[in-house]
Length: 128
Length: 141
Image (cartoon, rainbow over all chains, first blue to last red; front, side):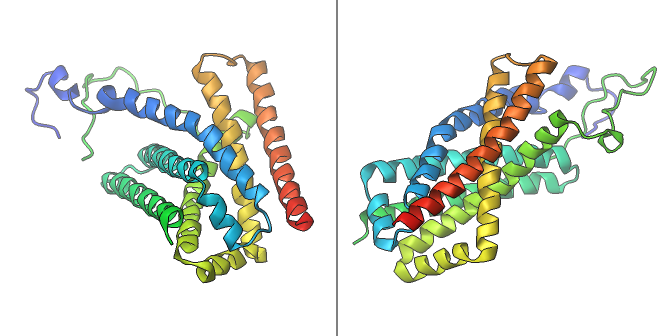
């Protein structure tokens, strides 16, 4: 917001965001990427190993503590990474007031789907 | 909210330099892989939603799980799944290439093209390998 010609260049630059929080976003994107390399490969390999199995076999696999833990870690890393990546795409291509709303919607959507996936995994792990 | 960037130089002597207009550029391996990493990221975000739907169906019980499995097993489902797996391996290999770049290695033009073609080759090989392995395991069961 322009507030007349009396603001100093420093006052105009302070608090614009990128210089304050860019490194944190960048680091979190890399950290989740590094976590996703083994987690996603574990998931794809497990699905291939279970090709052609029935519901009972799939459930008994996901109920093992290792599979439950890895699935929850995968969901956290996956949706955190998605939220960070989609935010950058929105910031690069959306240049209207819809940008802020879109970033918020993507963030909330990613958190919502992550929680839904974790709850489903826990229901399978601890359900009767 | 969107704030106008501060104009630190109110009277520029010349117009600010612009990025090259990609529409008049011949596509290069580097630029194609760059946008591919973005597009596959978008595809995989939708695939992640599919993963949650699949897990939720499994949590709801055998009927809903079998329904989702039958959707995945249909021809359209298989095409989408194949696309998601190819997108996954492209994004994985492209992402590893980015992580190597983050360590300030592999920026020479020759290295960029070698790693770029390695991403393409590895993604195709891993996708075909994953598909053949799952068909083999499913048939062997």
